[in-house]
Amino acid sequence: MMKFLSLLMIVVICACIVLPQISAQKLQDKVTCSSRKSRCFLRSISCPKQCPFTTPKDPKAKSCYINCNSPICKAECRHRKPSCKGIGAACYDPRFIGADGVVFYFHGKRDEHFALVSDTNLQINARFIGHRPAGRAHDYTWIQALGLLFGPHKVSVEATKASTWDNKVDHLKFSFNGTEILDSATSSWKSLDGDVTVERISSANSAIITVYGLVEIGVNVVPITKEDDRVHNYQIPFDVDCFAHLEVQFRLLDLSADVDGVLGRTYRPDYENRAGLGVAMPVVGGYDKYKTTSLFADDCKKCVFSSKNDGDDKGSM
Image 1: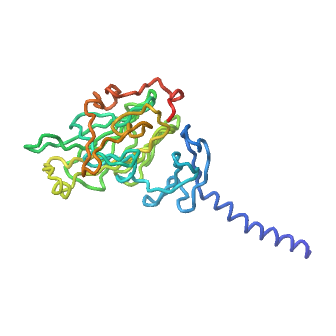
Image 2: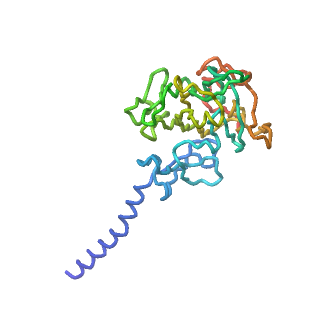
Image 3: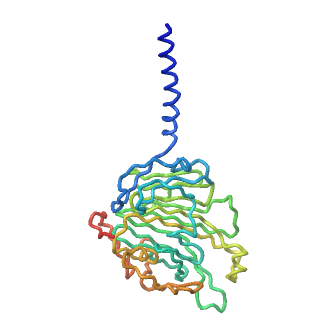
């Protein structure tokens, strides 16, 4: 009897040691790198304790992701909402941060479309809205919508017009292959093949769009505020339109050496930054090179996208 009790106590003690470890493992997600050119390709790595989940329930909590461009294969933590100060950002009137971390501005034209990224198997266009006060030679412009092309598919996200701004009212609109998806009452959506996901990361005006193996895009909808108007002298007609627009941050994966576009060109291995160093607002040209005829067109002079390309024959970076 004593031997049996002793054996039972040993089993209980072992269970107390092992079970918490098993539970802890279950409380941590795993992430996998989908970039073919990364040394981490298809590596499955556990998330750190500081950010154990890829999609935390708390919208303010950091999420777990794997940085495929890092020489070290490890999971890292990040804020889920897009950062206008991070690489791949496109915010404000529009201000970009290239792959080299350098800030530059691109002044397009209101109600026109421009290729932000054009690669052999991915095209991302932007529609600009804008305002030109009396006496000004150029438009103030902001990104109102994005159109993505990959294979035979089309995805769009846009900021809907608002005459007045209310943070509690959602102004995001999404579509997939021409069909509207993810209404304001739905938190997430996934394509039938699982390659495209759209997830709201707050109750209104923030989301993440993911095309597996190609791109992850964080988007916020924000208005032009009266303080913005005062500082920049936009002269916005607030009784008509508050110019709701997108703040965006791209995480581009598996790009070819031929990638182009207003932002995409900064990811080329032979890219030379020609923005004026030391200039407060370095403006990069390319209006005529990157203009497309619509949100889903790939007809700019520098566009390299082909819907027939599946990415297997891409040039190496």
